[in-house]
Amino acid sequence: MTFAALPLLTLALAGCQQAAEEPAVAEEGTAPQVKLPVPINAAMVGIIDQSADYIWAVGNGDLPRDDHDWDQVRGAVYDMILGGQLIQIEGTGEYDAQWVANQDWQKHSNDLTQIGQDALPLAEAKSTDVEAWRAIGDRLVQNCLACHELFKPEVPSQGILHESTVRESLGESIFD
Image (cartoon, rainbow, N blue to C red; front, side):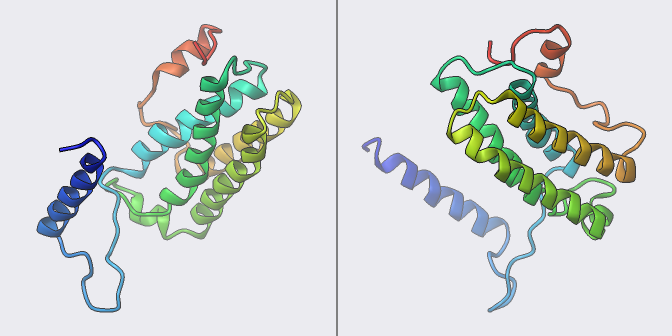
């Protein structure tokens, strides 16, 4: 088997596994019911919180050093764009169905996507305009705080943290 055929085989096997687990379409002409296999909170911490760190880092003057670092920033921006849409899908968390049904949740989620879309030209241009990045980061902070005030005021991450939080608290570069 050649390496070129490996991705196709992987996709075919994944499709077979999905078909065995649940039907792709419940009825003809209707879309399948999609549900995240994890709580929305896990998606937010794992995707949105992680990607926010790169936006905030550049806005705080922790500039990417090479193309690899810029790829990380650009990937984080794409994660923000996608993450805002992803958290509009119910997951397995206790409050997920209630959150996604709420118009304020939808607005804040769409705002996350827009913030990512606004950051994309900066990332693609490898912009070192710290003030432009800081403005994006400030919008992100405002959106996150407003959403958390409504939906998760007590424990924002429900105890889920990641490595960059520790590194940032020590003043270390996210790009190390």
